[in-house]
Length: 407
Picture (cartoon, rainbow, N blue to C red):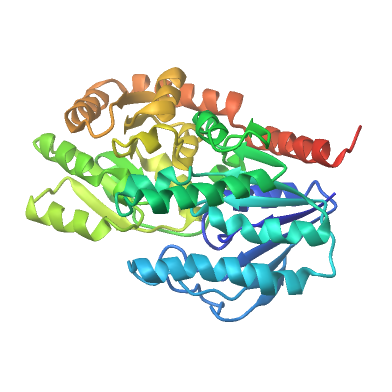
């Protein structure tokens, strides 16, 4: 079986698709990744790459075809739109030209926002005669409506029509959250929809590294660690208010690891409120994260109180479960259900800063054994539902069924 992965984001950018590709490549005949030049999240190309060049790379079991792209830039919405559009156009034209002599049985499109970035895969299917699978990570147009930046109903309806065309043109839709099924069924009834959760390769959490970073602030305090994107969806105000409510407990420190559109404003408000119990560590290399989890007492996750986020299961929740550390969260919907069902920690409603502060205090006051038991429960829940190697075999089975391979 020959597989083409269509994704705007790929290594050295940090996305779930990296692990999927690495494992999938070991089990199929050939695998190619069609992607752009890496520039997420800072908007600048990574060292060794040039935005306006195409290039081919070879890894042990697969090859990467990179196409020119306009970088994201820094917090400019027009530049960001050009970034998305440039990948769609470049991958559809130059990507097709570079790969035209190949053949693919499956085109697997990694559907992060915007879903429009799967269009190159739909265009190429007509030439290669491939089956197209879309792996939906975000709901559209709900995701853009939730930001509040776009409220024009005519525009949102137009986006909805485009999304319907995309879904109808695929052969299989995989959803990373069970809650995605009904909203997608409201758009299309033509294409089969199947649940395929995100995961994390446990090897990534246990691989030794020589990289060093000062984690003394985690080890010398009761550390409540937030990782990942720091943006509108993460409701940073909830974290700020919770931190203010427990500022009198000197041992507790909230550590923010990551970057995002709300990072600067959060830093400013932290300074204005003189919150000494919030510490910013910036973006860390993924190789360092196992050491971070090991040194943390509790892992923190928050989402805004918007309906769209009730459907979403952030990738970091799966990683938190796998890490074996207790979780404290302020979230609704499916993610809240997972935390409660797994007994991996404490969860309050989205934007409930008082409940979040109380839960942090409760975890601080409970015994080490009680926290360790939560971590063990989360790890066991991960292994039973999100174990990476089992899910990869399931994915291959879905591909084989599509192309009519029988065993």
